[in-house]
Image 1 (cartoon, rainbow, N blue to C red):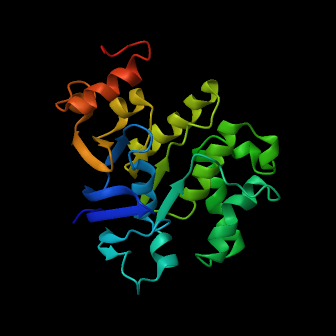
Image 2: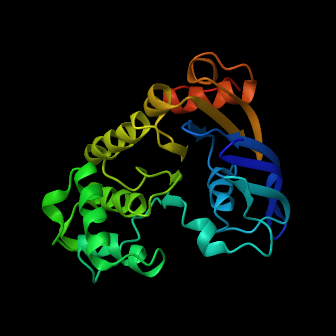
Length: 250
């Protein structure tokens, strides 16, 4: 059974039909990178997986449980899904350690000492064990994003969702975040990643999905989708991304 299964997913915002019948699975331990132009529905797809956006039609199953079922216990279903956003969304009034323990104690009902131990272990995983007492304003953007990853990992997720996790970072800070994500992939974490980092997708992904216009245009191994795409829309997107100086003939 796939860890994530999406069936005939539709999502509209007013008259804008953003997702147009998405069918999609993610297997246990798989790293899937979703690429495509702005407005293609990538982030909306990701947000539908943990019901931050409610689809008008279709079903989403995570670990065999339909989270689009109106009767689902949503907090319990979401507890197994970690999400890292473009913006870091840390609590500015809490230090790094508290940012990583508050959801553990309130949602998972862990004892403070256990939550503290889990948080410290995950902060060490992302290379920030020396920053436990720092506040978000004292950290770089890359460090804040790594805290956000540690916070998500501290909930022991079966699935990690990343929505353009490096897009808000200065270029020199991107590498540290991608290094953490590479490490998670090597550890076997199931990851669904919306990204514009083509080198990362080529290196780390088991599968690359190209979206455009609210549909999946093509998907497959990175060497095929990025290295030798079949569809003209994919080829055009990659030419623009990989060679910004390229000008299409009129």
